[in-house]
Image (cartoon, rainbow, N blue to C red):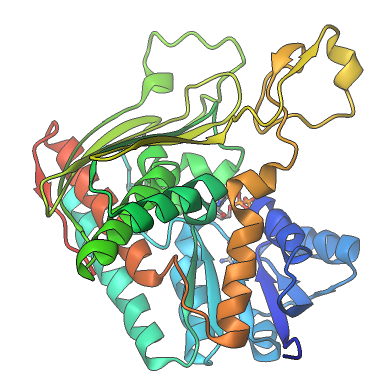
Length: 393
Ligand SMILES: NC(=O)c1ccc[n+]([C@@H]2O[C@H](COP(=O)([O-])OP(=O)(O)OC[C@H]3O[C@@H](n4cnc5c(N)ncnc54)[C@H](O)[C@@H]3O)[C@@H](O)[C@H]2O)c1
């Protein structure tokens, strides 16, 4: 079969837009023509475009009109309007995590620490519904860029669950590091919350995905979350926190530590940690305790490579692993970090859907369940961990 050609537009020109572009170079099933980029920061978009030999657009609509798919690589506050604009023109939208959320009431007084969290739950559910309605009407689709779903260790676990008919009893997972780089991340009004949504969405979505896989493999019906209880903390904003320069600590009104305890409709459970207070490089892992096996999916770090370096400066030009503070001593360099993280596989799969109609693994419905669980978790945290029901889609 001849390869199809897909025309691509990138929205946003920061960190995510960079790894999206790199992953596009690894798509083999489809010819990808990157038409251009649009970002609110026109200077940043111009630099991004020049470096990659693509065009910088000064209007989102003009870019959407020229392409088959839009990569939504902006802060979460802009995900819904950009994705809906693409869907309304029958284009696909690859949407970065988290799918959507609640970004406050627009007032100067809005404060993420103190506003009633049921507002966040109600508004985020309404946002999800608007996005799903736009998708339903469109010839395009939302492809949810949750790379954990495509990480090779999580896909290997999918195979084990499907082929052995495993029942997952408990999932235990975490995403943590020493703080996100994006300036906007510090503010609820741009990020829609703190670490519980920003990082917690990754292991949570992988856990929700694997329970769906389990249900579909054994009975044809996905197993969904039923209730959640949660705690959040702002450790780096404690009056007594002692800043030694290793951990980001300029957050405005968001949590930097969270724990979600999810109960599924079959009574089994998942415990998901997320934090911005961990040194030693990014820590992304998911443990699955099943009735017939146990797996520890080490996304990052993993032991594909272990290196001892006696002198820091020896490695001055060598990338080791995301967010590591030092390259001296023992480390776990990732020989291909984007591969272990699932970025390449995710992009290949999405272009398979756009070009050839393949069924995606990471769908809007999975994304919607993750967002719904997280905002129910924020309501729970406000009630000191009381259990809160979860709506599913
Ligand atoms: N999957 C992952 O591993 C991963 C990693 C990092 C970030 N992300 C996600 O990617 C998204 C972007 O994060 P980032 O780290 O790249 O942020 P960033 O601050 O590095 O870049 C954001 C870009 O979006 C542009 N922008 C902001 N508002 C816009 C709007 N309304 N319209 C058009 N452009 C706009 C900015 O000009 C900037 O170029 C977030 O949703 C984040 O959660 C995902």
